Image (cartoon, rainbow, N blue to C red; front, side, top):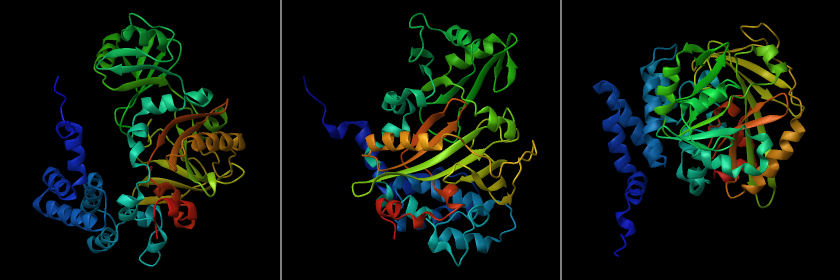
Length: 394
């Protein structure tokens, strides 16, 4: 039997395409939707990203975000926006992070963050980009991971933590819903794309809090491909009392590892939702707070949009005080994260999404090259020597 050569493997061809920045530049330029002027802006931003060493598969993202910002109507002039783009900063960093033309060198630009040298976890991107593989990797710490009941492959239910192992259909999901709410999330990707909250209340099926028929649930489940069905994790009752029952509370934690200094938990912040924000963290109407060493929330800021942020010590809907709220059990969480990150030391820079619960903490996912800007809004990460060493930042 003749074995195909590696060069014919389509995955190798895709990798070659991604590694060729010029092909990526051409591809993303043709794909970008907009007027001729906006396409020109896109190409200009893309070429600038290319010149500064941005990874090929990230050129489209950087150029797209910059060009979208140039198009939006804000208080910033087009000339000022271009100043930020040319330096590798999204223009909304002026409002969100506090980047100015005087202090920009103190912050990690997109050109630095998406630079090939900064991708220290390249080999393990498939592990952390696949939430099912992450679930298996964290199996040793099952008490800190939500139950994963099913993996859905083209409508086919594959049992994970489910006690039901045979004759699985959408009705299996319905029976589980009668016991507890579930989260349905894509196994790959981020930004809340494709996320659904599934629940059952007083004989009524709820999809994203909207009443539905059994047929709607059947169509949804049968149409899922590469999905996970897990526990829907609620924040602790103490947090819910402050932010409201329907609002999310998700911590974002940065860990680093070097052979010289070992593993450390470097930064912790939290994103607090509102009814206006909905169930995912990808939009706006969100409060951000730094978490100090004692677990108290500090420097709370409310983000109306990428262009408008306001210091706000109380929740805008409940009017209860957020500033100074203490998250209990933080020392326990740090010990667990140091243990986990040490076992995953082959990926020396990780960003974790975690929900504080009544019992402890629940880890939703790990990002192998997670965004840093929400940490930066509280303190520049260029002060972190370990991170700068790992990401080869000047």
